[in-house]
Amino acid sequence: MSLQATTRPPAQRQARAVRLGPRSVAALTLVSAVGVAGFGWPFLAPPTSRIGAHAQDAPWLFAGVLVLLVAVVAAAISESGLGPKAVAMLGVLAATGAALRPIGAGTAGIEPMFFLMVLSGRVLGPGFGFVLGSVTMFASALLTGGVGPWLPFQMLAMGWFAMGAGLLPGPDRLRGRGELAMLSGYGFLAAFAYGTVMNMAGWPFMSALASNVAFDPQAPVAANLARFVAYCLATSLGWDLGRAVVTVVLTLALGPAVLRALRRATRRAAFETPVTFDAAQK
Image 1: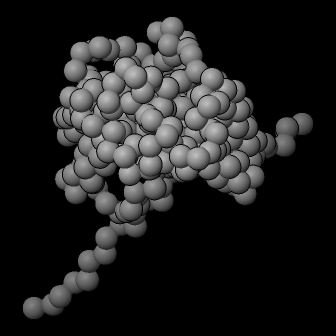
Image 2 (image 1 turned 180 degrees about the vertical axis):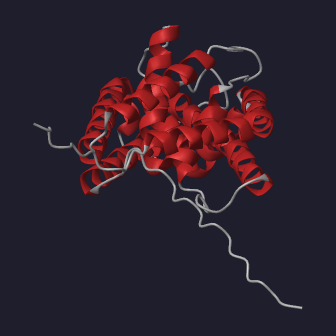
C-alpha cells in the first residue's frame, strides 16, 4: 500500500482595497488619540482642573475631530491609490449601511448595519474598514437628519468598530464556523463598546443637579466612574444588548452568504493588481 501526499491549496491573501501607509497611520494615530481624550477626559482630568468649566467648548473639539477624520480618509485614499473599483465598493457598502441604519431605529437597539460593518472590515481589511465605518455613519446622518456635534464621535467610533474587524486574526486561513464564531463574538463585544464610548460622549454634559448618575466635575475619578457605570446600566444597557444580539443573529444567519459575496467581489475587482496599458497597435 502506498501513501500519497496531499497538499492543501494555498490560502488567498486578504484583500486590501485601502492600505494604510505611513501618513495615514500617523493621521489615524493622531485622531484616535484626540478621540480617546475627547471621550475619556472626565476620567483623565483631575477634579481641580478647569476643564469641566469649559463644557460649552465641546463643539469646537468635535469639529476638530471631524477635520482630523477627513484628513485620515484623505491620507488613506491618496496613499493607497484608491481606484474606481474600490470607490464603487465603498459607495455601495456605505449606501447599504446607511439604508440599514434607520431600520428599527428607536426599537430596542435593532441596528442591522453593525453586522455589515463587521463583515466588510473582515474581508476588506482595517484601512477600508475605518474609511467605510466613518463614511457610512456620515451618510446615514445625512439620510436621517442626525447631523450634530455628536456626529464626529459617531464616525470615529464606527471607524474603530469596522477597523477592529479587519485586525482580527486569521484573515487568510480561518473559515467556516470558527470564523463565524469569532466574528459573532467580536460583534457582540464591539456593540457594547460602541454604546459605551458614545455614552461617554454625552454623559459629561448632563447637569449634576438633574441626576445622581450625572458627571460631577468636583468628584474624584472613582466616584465619577461609579456614576458612569450606573448611568450606562440605567439608560443604555437594554439598547446595547439589543444591538449586540441583532449583530450576532445576523452574522450567524447571513454571514456565510455575505462573506462569500464580498470575497468574490474583491477577487474579481483585483484591487492590488497594477493597472497596465497595452501599446496601441498601428
